[in-house]
Image (cartoon, rainbow, N blue to C red; front, side, top):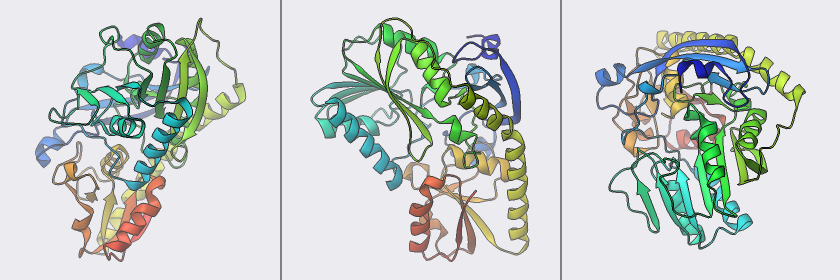
Length: 386
């Protein structure tokens, strides 16, 4: 897809209005680097967001796919959190029970390290194949084959009963092309499960740290409905999930292309929310820069808990020099450095015995879990959602 094509809405084909220039950001927030210098030299790209008045879709019109190279160093797994693991387990159980995914074959596009497929296999005695360039070559999961490559429509010919595509569509320059190819070649009766971040959350008061370079698109309920139906699917269910942060779609391929269900009031409200985002983002960044500086002046220490994309986005905006301590439950990140500021990641235990007075988290869904862990470490620190 050419750069010019990104000036048209990827969901409905309409025109776009520029709403936020967030400057440069690391191209891969999930990449890990062995040294601070290599992390600070990570490739960056421009974030210029525009919104469609027709369906509320938001996209980065400055996105350049040539900058993005996924490999095994990329790690966005959330399964080390009990809060997220509970969500994933409940999702798997519901799909297995509600749609009879037992003894079936599952394909996953963007399978990451294989956590979701492993759960589907174990819960429903299913087999599965996952496609992802970040797969660790030596990964072994009973009943599951992981392919260290992209899923390429037309190349994969195995018949499947369920195709899952979670947190992939927002990364694509042309998500409609993938969806249309899937609907056209769908095995009879196959169920499709699509999941993306919710733009209603992304641009709301609790989602300020979700605008990252790998996300070309930010789907609202209306824009996702538009794209999925235009691509030849009948939507069986579309819901907000994981504390309202995701949009989850269950669908089947359908004859013909359905028209978008108009909800003009919701679209207008969403567009207004998006248009207010830049001012809210800038004021929040300024606030936390001042807060961190004030605490340092008092000799107090600040730590950020969570080295996922939201955490990386926050520390790069608030602490570009890479001085704030950041910790994460994922042992694969321990001792690694994050792109942008070069922050070194530690395990939560590394905070024990330190003068940390404030622990910042970027996702309210994890507040209770993290607060309990902070207390368990014996830290006399306040936990605050930023």
